[in-house]
Structure formats: C-alpha cells, structure tokens
Image (cartoon, rainbow over all chains, first blue to last red; front, side, top):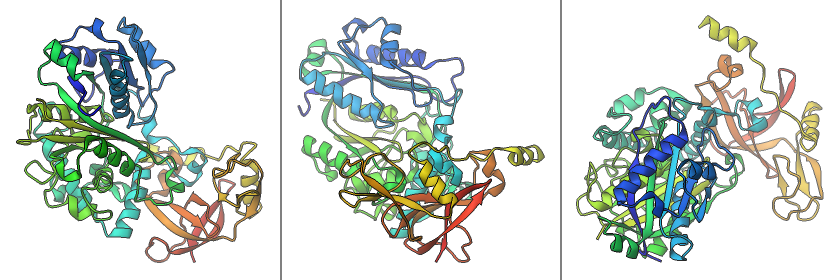
Length: 376
Length: 140
C-alpha cells in the first residue's frame, strides 16, 4: 500500500469572507481547480468523498454535491468525524483505489461560517449550559490548564506557537490573516477563556479545498506532474468527552500517529516538515507530544525557541495553518503538505523528503494522520 | 453597554431539560443530594446519566448518593459570554470535578479564597440558580 496511491491534484478557493457563496458552489470551485491541477477530466472521477460543512450539516450532502457536479460516482458520501474527517476520507479513498473500488477520487470540503453561522463553535454542551459550559474554546482551555498545571507549560510557550505560525501566514499572499504576531502582542491579547487568549484561537473562515487521488501507476500513465505519494495514514478516537476523559493531557493522536508512522516505515526524526491541526495553540503542543517529536509533558519548552519556524528543527504550518491561513478544518494542511512535497511551497523547506499532516475533531475526540513523500 | 446589560438581565437562564432518564438526577439535586449511577453487575460508577453501563452494557444500575468529596481535575475562566445569562457573571469559572466515588462532572468552583490548583480537595455546595439546584463545589 505504501506509496501506491498519490495525490495528483490540489485546489482551493480564496479564504476569508466570501458572501453569496454556498458550500456546494465553493466545493465545486475547489474540485474544478484540483482536477485542472491534476490534468484530469471530471468524467474520470468515480469517487466523491466530502466532509459535511461544520456550520450546517445536511442529510445526504455527498449526494447533493455529486448531483450538482453531474457525477454518479461508484464510491461516494459524507463522513462525520469533525475535523479529522478530511484525512480519514483521503485514507479511505486510498484504500478504495488500492482495492479496485474506484480509480480517481475527489476529496473535498467547504464551509462558510464567517458569512453564515458560527453557532457550531459557540453552542452549549447539553445540560451543562446551566454551569456556563459553552463553546469549543473552553474545551481546549480545559485541556490546556491541566497541561500547564501538571507540566509547568506556560502561556508564553503557547504564545511561541502562535508567533511561529502567524509568521508563516504573514508570508502567504493567500492567507486570510497576514499580520505577524510578537510575543509581547500575544501577552496583551485578550482572554477568551483563560488560559486561552484570542491569539490562541483559529480564524473563522469561508472557503473550500479539494484533492484528487489515484494510483501511482495511473498518475504515471496520465502524465500527472509531480504526483505526491501517500506513505502512511492512521486514526484514533478518544471518544470520551473532556469531563469524562481519564487523562486530559493524552489523546488519540498518539494511536493515530503511531499507526501512520508504522505504515510509512518512518520514525518521528525522519519527518522534515509538519502540517499540524492548529485550531488552538494547545492542539499543536499536544500533537507534537503525541506524535513523538517531544516527550510527553515537554511540548511547551519544545515548541518555544523557534523550533517550529521555517529554518527550525520541525517547520510547522508553513502556509499559516488554521491560525493564519484559514480557519477551515484541515484540508488546507494537506494542500500545503503537497506543495512542500512538490518543492513548490511559498515558504519551501529545502530538501524536505517527508511531511506529516494531522487533522482532528471535537475537543481532540478524533484524530487522523497522513504522511506524504516528496514527488519523484 | 446599557443595552447589553439590559439584555443580560432579561436573558433566560439556560435551564437543564430533564428527560425520563435524567429527571431523577435533577430531582435529587433539588432535594439536596448529588447522585450518580452504579452498575449492579460490574460496580462501575458514572455520570452523566446513561441508559446502559458504558463498561459492561448492563441496564441494571442504581442511583447512588455521592459523599460530596471530590478533587479538581481542571478549570477555565470565561472572559467571553456565549450566552447572555452569563454576561453579568464574567469572569466566571467552570471546572471538571472528580467525585471520590469516580464519576466526573462539569461544575463551577465557588467561594474559593485562594488560588486553585489541580487535584485540590473540594466539597459539594449545592446552590440555586434561577430556581434550579446545581452541584457546585468549593475548596475543602
């Protein structure tokens, strides 16, 4: 399986505020761009897999999208796994291609919470609303506090993650937020839910992205330029809600990363560049621990000191991630991973051979990992 | 600011919506008791209310009164109100609390005179908010 399936094309819309655009329209634009990038006609697509829009999930969304594209894919549908779904769909598509279920797969995602509704990110957690328990940031803040109290992780260490990623986003002409951040500015950033400040939290964005998958053999036959091999993938599900989780500082990212690295036959030190889901700074910190880059509990000091910046030991989110490029849940990390593996990224990591990508959903309830290799 | 303050005064309390399953939990709190579920088969203890024991799947379980002793797992301080009812309470604390008997729940820490720290001992302090009895905790 390792390397048998490639990402042959990538596409993305503009990011930010896109009034008047529905998610079907945004998905179609991203898919059209991805197919053009791969040099593949739409009619060749026989798998269409989509993560439903977070802000407005709809019944049979995959079929609605297929109809709007006049496609009758053999394999199709939507997968609800929160923010981990995009990578899990890529993994599913790779397995379907490997086993002859389909030949050319489109995986896409679109949402418009910036011009539409942010309710999904701000709603009550059931009857616990009576205690004031609302919103996604608070769930991550609960994990962050435990990490800080248990291991001495500091606010400045979380800030260093935001500083690194915002630096990369500021250099990206396509990014929604092109404003670099200093640690002093971070310290003055207002609390949202202490210990998380505004600048620990990702953007809210309209936009879409899509990728085209096929076998390496087919890509070669079709003359696809710079196909990027998929070396490994994995998943994990923490399942328990934050309040019920036995250990707030450990997550299913560990199982997911381990599975993906084993499949790729790689160790953490073989990874040259990482696209880590950064819905909040603490998510990056806990993911680099779970993936084995940093020892458990040492993520704070490990992430500080420029290690995550281009030129550092593990450049992370080289297009600006969710904190700076677009708050879209995850597929933009894949398109940037592909650009890095093609040697065409805006902030290219010189000589990068292997890229790890993380997606995750809920309050670290779900996790999915993808490992890409440099295009031949 | 005045308009916001007025809105907060008039906002409805986001009261629990008891179901057949959760009504005994809220009823017990109303009578001054915090209860959790304990499995007849495997002795597992849990909250929030579920129809089946999440460990063994048994539907045979009993409501059991908690001692009120607990520890602090983690906490956050809201500086943003996601619901108008809480606008006038900012900043307020929400915590994850572990009962001595095992179950964990979301709660508020109230009447703390010093700084909070993880794993600190807590004791139950049932308080009413807009007429609803809530299981809050205070440093022991």
